[in-house]
Length: 123
Image 1 (tube, rainbow, N blue to C red):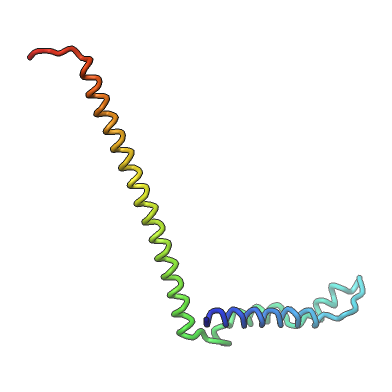
Image 2 (tube, rainbow, N blue to C red; image 1 turned 180 degrees about the vertical axis):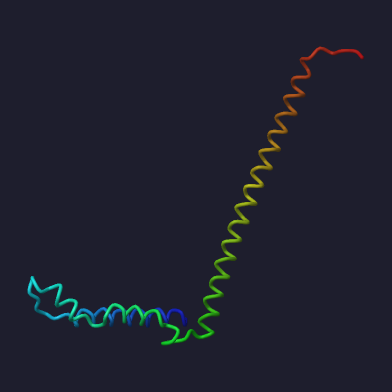
């Protein structure tokens, strides 16, 4: 629930920043001066924007609940992955065991069947 609220607020913030960047560019632009005006009328300098995004920990520290939720999700995903691989390994082991049993059965039958045609020798 908290993760959903965090994602929702992030989407709202990004949409506001997107609209703000669109509004910050002037409505009239001459073809020759378009690039120059874009650089001058940007809402925030690129370096400032990068620093703003890099300094998340200073702006809004992560709450322990958020960290706990993320860790639980990672552990749950790891457990699901482990169970899936264990199931796949068990299925493969069963398949190999059945193949070996069938091969042993065929070999035994071939030996029994073939020994009937061999001449009997007295020792």
